[in-house]
Image 1 (cartoon, rainbow, N blue to C red):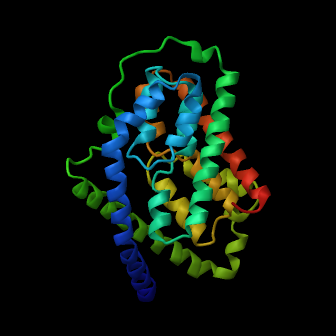
Image 2: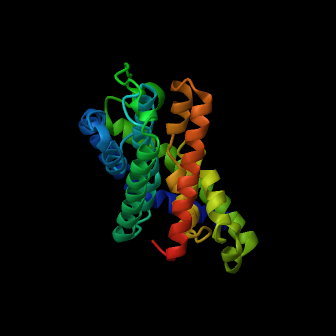
Length: 282
């Protein structure tokens, strides 16, 4: 037990400098480009899913939350909302970078999420054309600031806050995983349900529905530990939209509509994960 705790502590401390530098860059991007990015999506019109899917990959604080608010005001289409939800990386990117995962693999994961988000967004907008013709132009508040980020004026302080929170969470998750791996045995990891075809994707999609950074942290860590297949990882990350769903349920009055959007997000994410599993790798 002492060795496991010490190993997890050392591994977590090794990631801290990378996490801090990554979050510092993310905060810089957020402060410099946030308003421009949201403005582009507002003006995108029928090309919304393309802009939403591509810009959703950019690591910005609470971007999915802002998209939920824009949708609630009918400023963006349903397809654009889903494109953002599917492509957003949340805490996945900092963890992969801090763990020194090969850059080509990271880029492939991000590209696949963006492509699935864009294609799904255009398909949804095509199917729900009448739904998207609702009157738009309602007043929208900055949901990112109001609901999620509460970012500091200093990007350094904000980056330190994010780094501390995620490092602590990583330590707890790593301890739990290492204890489970020690009990199960590394040779039995391949038999876990998260490595089973279809069943793994279905369960990972459920984990992805957790409305905070915990989902992407757990999913990414499980994948790097070998306890989750590439298909299951992709399904969970596609479904995971950070606090986007939480903000959607708070700002959009129709509970039935919110549940339908959640179901659509889950189905699309799981299908995307299954497709990844069939290909064998990312």
